[in-house]
Length: 366
Image 1 (cartoon, rainbow, N blue to C red):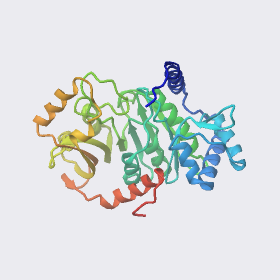
Image 2: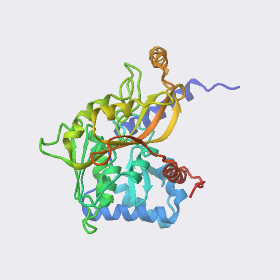
Image 3: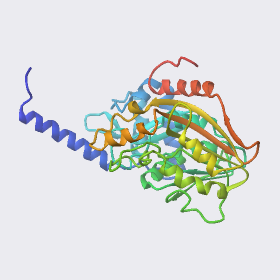
Image 4: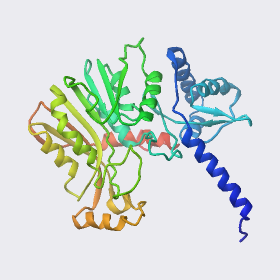
């Protein structure tokens, strides 16, 4: 086996360092006005409709493409908004991921951009929450932990009268602003997305209340002292943000209001810690829980290999933790109080069909 020379190794490291620095400095997409917003949406829609495979290769697999003649104008429009970057070689590199979800086209950060403020991609939890959330015409909607804005934008397109999104991450707010420009239309009657920077309810006025509060919080359990993405760092047991948020829910809900959350939570095979927290925080509410996914505890967190991992893991194993559950929780002021478990198998199958398209596979349950 031939070893690479030191010169080759240094060159490879230089390329990696250059790419890492480029990704770190990569700005969010930016759209100036309705004319550019319509042009960007038109370019994305045309590219997707013409060749879904090439769209997926560029925007979901992060592969640079040499545009075909019909695609060049679209690439130039997207380059002006920061979605792609042309190179002297004539190809275009993706600067964002773009997910197609029902009528939405949502940009997020590239997975390779491993900074703490990375804007989260779409996975099953976002698809499930968009598809299942109980948005009613005329609702005032609040989304905490806004991220890319996908849930809030879906609510706006379904006839909400007001939609407010809150996030601590300035980069997430910038992505949400671009996604709002591309996906909302005054001509269709969509209300604008109001954005606030801050932690949970902190940036809201004292009198603001809502018919629906949505959240897909940072929920990953992370060993103490470990640096991790803002979008996923949920503290040692994954529930720090949930604990901080739940006491304010009741006071921000209008009569007949609803709260919806998709989160992951450590548990044994019978109980979920997040469910217990919701029940304790919202006595008298009807709490509907759908189990969406599960992973054995040690499989889910095997990627944490820092020195403190073993003690952290063993502490939870000694408490009887065996699994991590993905849950959709809906709490309603109206209806018989108490816990209700609902079978979500059909809804999960529909979500998996969308995930399969994003991954370039034929859905097994169309």
